[in-house]
Length: 215
Image (tube, rainbow, N blue to C red; front, side, top):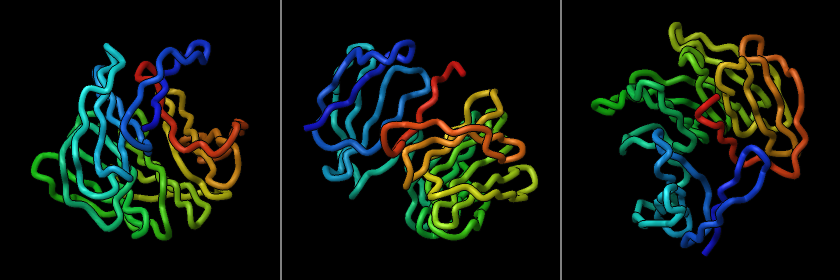
Protein backbone atom coordinates (compact mmCIF):
# COMPACT_ATOMS: atom_id res chain seq x y z
CA UNK A 1 0.00 0.00 0.00
CA UNK A 2 1.20 3.51 -0.79
CA UNK A 3 -0.27 7.02 -1.05
CA UNK A 4 -0.92 9.49 -3.88
CA UNK A 5 -1.04 13.14 -2.77
CA UNK A 6 -3.19 15.80 -4.43
CA UNK A 7 -1.49 19.19 -4.01
CA UNK A 8 -3.10 22.61 -4.36
CA UNK A 9 -0.72 24.57 -6.59
CA UNK A 10 -1.70 28.00 -5.21
CA UNK A 11 -0.14 27.40 -1.81
CA UNK A 12 1.37 23.89 -1.92
CA UNK A 13 -1.17 22.48 0.53
CA UNK A 14 -1.93 18.76 0.36
CA UNK A 15 -5.72 18.58 -0.02
CA UNK A 16 -6.11 14.79 -0.30
CA UNK A 17 -4.08 11.64 0.26
CA UNK A 18 -5.36 8.59 -1.62
CA UNK A 19 -4.34 5.04 -0.72
CA UNK A 20 -3.43 2.81 -3.66
CA UNK A 21 -2.33 -0.86 -3.68
CA UNK A 22 1.41 -0.78 -4.29
CA UNK A 23 4.37 1.48 -4.93
CA UNK A 24 3.71 4.15 -7.59
CA UNK A 25 6.11 4.97 -10.39
CA UNK A 26 4.23 7.50 -12.57
CA UNK A 27 0.96 9.42 -12.65
CA UNK A 28 -1.07 10.57 -15.68
CA UNK A 29 -4.23 12.70 -15.68
CA UNK A 30 -6.92 12.41 -18.36
CA UNK A 31 -7.30 15.44 -20.68
CA UNK A 32 -10.68 16.30 -19.12
CA UNK A 33 -9.22 16.18 -15.59
CA UNK A 34 -11.69 13.52 -14.47
CA UNK A 35 -9.39 10.55 -13.85
CA UNK A 36 -5.79 9.84 -12.91
CA UNK A 37 -3.90 6.63 -13.62
CA UNK A 38 -0.96 5.51 -11.47
CA UNK A 39 1.39 2.70 -12.43
CA UNK A 40 2.47 -0.07 -10.05
CA UNK A 41 5.55 -1.78 -11.57
CA UNK A 42 5.87 -4.30 -8.76
CA UNK A 43 2.20 -5.27 -8.95
CA UNK A 44 1.90 -5.59 -12.77
CA UNK A 45 -1.12 -3.29 -12.54
CA UNK A 46 -2.40 0.26 -12.68
CA UNK A 47 -4.89 2.03 -10.42
CA UNK A 48 -7.55 4.44 -11.67
CA UNK A 49 -8.40 7.40 -9.40
CA UNK A 50 -11.68 9.33 -9.72
CA UNK A 51 -10.62 12.96 -9.22
CA UNK A 52 -14.19 14.03 -8.42
CA UNK A 53 -14.41 11.78 -5.37
CA UNK A 54 -10.64 11.42 -4.73
CA UNK A 55 -11.03 7.65 -4.53
CA UNK A 56 -9.20 4.78 -6.20
CA UNK A 57 -12.08 3.19 -8.11
CA UNK A 58 -10.44 0.20 -9.79
CA UNK A 59 -7.21 -1.68 -10.43
CA UNK A 60 -6.35 -3.04 -13.89
CA UNK A 61 -3.86 -5.85 -14.52
CA UNK A 62 -1.20 -5.14 -17.16
CA UNK A 63 1.90 -6.86 -18.45
CA UNK A 64 5.09 -6.93 -16.38
CA UNK A 65 6.53 -3.70 -14.96
CA UNK A 66 4.05 -1.02 -16.09
CA UNK A 67 6.13 2.14 -15.93
CA UNK A 68 4.69 5.21 -17.65
CA UNK A 69 1.16 6.07 -18.80
CA UNK A 70 -0.65 8.34 -21.25
CA UNK A 71 -4.33 8.19 -22.18
CA UNK A 72 -4.38 6.20 -25.44
CA UNK A 73 -4.11 2.44 -26.27
CA UNK A 74 -1.55 -0.35 -26.84
CA UNK A 75 1.10 -0.02 -29.57
CA UNK A 76 4.17 -1.92 -30.71
CA UNK A 77 7.28 0.27 -30.43
CA UNK A 78 11.06 -0.03 -30.23
CA UNK A 79 13.12 -1.79 -27.57
CA UNK A 80 12.84 -0.65 -23.91
CA UNK A 81 10.02 1.91 -24.35
CA UNK A 82 9.52 4.15 -21.35
CA UNK A 83 8.65 7.86 -21.48
CA UNK A 84 5.95 8.96 -23.92
CA UNK A 85 4.18 12.08 -25.10
CA UNK A 86 1.01 12.34 -27.21
CA UNK A 87 0.56 15.08 -29.81
CA UNK A 88 -2.18 17.61 -29.05
CA UNK A 89 -4.34 16.29 -31.90
CA UNK A 90 -3.90 12.72 -30.65
CA UNK A 91 -2.60 11.48 -34.03
CA UNK A 92 1.01 10.78 -33.04
CA UNK A 93 2.62 9.15 -30.03
CA UNK A 94 6.32 9.75 -29.38
CA UNK A 95 8.06 7.04 -27.36
CA UNK A 96 11.59 7.15 -25.92
CA UNK A 97 13.18 3.71 -26.31
CA UNK A 98 15.52 4.51 -23.48
CA UNK A 99 18.15 1.78 -23.71
CA UNK A 100 18.10 1.70 -27.53
CA UNK A 101 18.81 5.43 -27.75
CA UNK A 102 15.94 6.04 -30.19
CA UNK A 103 12.54 7.74 -30.29
CA UNK A 104 9.63 6.18 -32.20
CA UNK A 105 6.92 8.30 -33.84
CA UNK A 106 3.80 6.12 -33.89
CA UNK A 107 0.58 6.90 -35.75
CA UNK A 108 -2.25 6.27 -33.30
CA UNK A 109 -4.64 5.30 -36.09
CA UNK A 110 -3.33 1.90 -37.12
CA UNK A 111 -0.28 1.85 -34.84
CA UNK A 112 2.40 2.07 -37.55
CA UNK A 113 5.83 3.56 -36.79
CA UNK A 114 6.16 6.61 -39.04
CA UNK A 115 9.73 7.60 -38.12
CA UNK A 116 12.52 6.55 -35.78
CA UNK A 117 14.94 9.18 -34.49
CA UNK A 118 18.40 7.84 -33.61
CA UNK A 119 19.77 9.92 -30.73
CA UNK A 120 22.30 7.57 -29.14
CA UNK A 121 23.06 6.50 -25.58
CA UNK A 122 20.52 5.96 -22.83
CA UNK A 123 17.59 8.39 -22.96
CA UNK A 124 15.03 9.52 -20.41
CA UNK A 125 12.59 12.45 -20.47
CA UNK A 126 10.64 13.60 -23.53
CA UNK A 127 8.14 16.37 -24.24
CA UNK A 128 6.63 18.47 -27.05
CA UNK A 129 6.58 22.23 -27.47
CA UNK A 130 3.10 23.73 -27.17
CA UNK A 131 2.82 24.22 -30.95
CA UNK A 132 3.74 20.56 -31.46
CA UNK A 133 6.60 21.38 -33.84
CA UNK A 134 9.56 20.50 -31.61
CA UNK A 135 10.26 17.34 -29.64
CA UNK A 136 12.67 17.62 -26.70
CA UNK A 137 14.60 14.57 -25.48
CA UNK A 138 16.99 14.15 -22.53
CA UNK A 139 20.07 12.25 -23.72
CA UNK A 140 21.01 11.17 -20.20
CA UNK A 141 24.08 9.10 -21.10
CA UNK A 142 25.64 11.81 -23.23
CA UNK A 143 24.80 14.82 -21.02
CA UNK A 144 22.91 16.44 -23.90
CA UNK A 145 19.52 18.00 -24.56
CA UNK A 146 18.21 17.20 -28.05
CA UNK A 147 15.56 19.18 -29.94
CA UNK A 148 13.96 17.56 -33.02
CA UNK A 149 12.20 19.68 -35.65
CA UNK A 150 9.27 17.44 -36.50
CA UNK A 151 8.65 19.14 -39.86
CA UNK A 152 12.18 18.48 -41.17
CA UNK A 153 13.48 15.71 -38.83
CA UNK A 154 16.51 17.97 -38.16
CA UNK A 155 18.08 17.46 -34.72
CA UNK A 156 19.85 20.09 -32.63
CA UNK A 157 21.64 19.35 -29.38
CA UNK A 158 23.28 21.27 -26.56
CA UNK A 159 25.40 20.15 -23.59
CA UNK A 160 23.43 19.75 -20.36
CA UNK A 161 24.61 17.91 -17.31
CA UNK A 162 25.07 16.05 -15.25
CA UNK A 163 22.49 13.43 -16.31
CA UNK A 164 19.53 15.33 -17.84
CA UNK A 165 16.48 13.42 -16.65
CA UNK A 166 12.80 14.43 -16.83
CA UNK A 167 11.68 17.17 -19.24
CA UNK A 168 8.59 19.40 -19.39
CA UNK A 169 7.76 22.16 -21.87
CA UNK A 170 6.11 25.00 -19.96
CA UNK A 171 3.09 26.02 -22.04
CA UNK A 172 3.58 29.11 -24.23
CA UNK A 173 6.39 30.56 -22.08
CA UNK A 174 9.17 29.34 -24.35
CA UNK A 175 10.76 27.55 -21.38
CA UNK A 176 11.66 23.93 -20.89
CA UNK A 177 12.26 22.44 -17.42
CA UNK A 178 14.75 19.58 -17.22
CA UNK A 179 15.72 17.84 -13.99
CA UNK A 180 19.01 16.14 -13.17
CA UNK A 181 19.31 12.50 -12.14
CA UNK A 182 22.49 13.30 -10.18
CA UNK A 183 21.91 16.74 -8.64
CA UNK A 184 18.96 18.27 -6.71
CA UNK A 185 18.03 20.89 -9.28
CA UNK A 186 15.88 21.67 -12.31
CA UNK A 187 17.33 23.59 -15.24
CA UNK A 188 15.28 26.31 -16.95
CA UNK A 189 16.03 26.04 -20.67
CA UNK A 190 15.23 28.40 -23.54
CA UNK A 191 13.39 26.28 -26.12
CA UNK A 192 14.79 28.19 -29.11
CA UNK A 193 18.49 28.41 -28.20
CA UNK A 194 18.63 25.44 -25.76
CA UNK A 195 20.60 27.73 -23.45
CA UNK A 196 20.30 27.44 -19.66
CA UNK A 197 18.42 30.50 -18.36
CA UNK A 198 18.29 29.51 -14.69
CA UNK A 199 18.44 26.74 -12.11
CA UNK A 200 15.74 25.83 -9.58
CA UNK A 201 17.07 24.15 -6.44
CA UNK A 202 14.84 21.37 -5.10
CA UNK A 203 14.96 18.96 -2.15
CA UNK A 204 16.08 15.90 -4.10
CA UNK A 205 15.83 14.20 -7.49
CA UNK A 206 12.87 15.47 -9.56
CA UNK A 207 11.45 12.19 -10.73
CA UNK A 208 8.40 13.58 -12.53
CA UNK A 209 7.26 17.03 -13.67
CA UNK A 210 3.57 17.67 -14.44
CA UNK A 211 2.38 21.04 -15.77
CA UNK A 212 -1.07 22.48 -15.16
CA UNK A 213 -3.26 22.22 -18.31
CA UNK A 214 -4.01 25.95 -18.05
CA UNK A 215 -0.47 27.05 -18.93
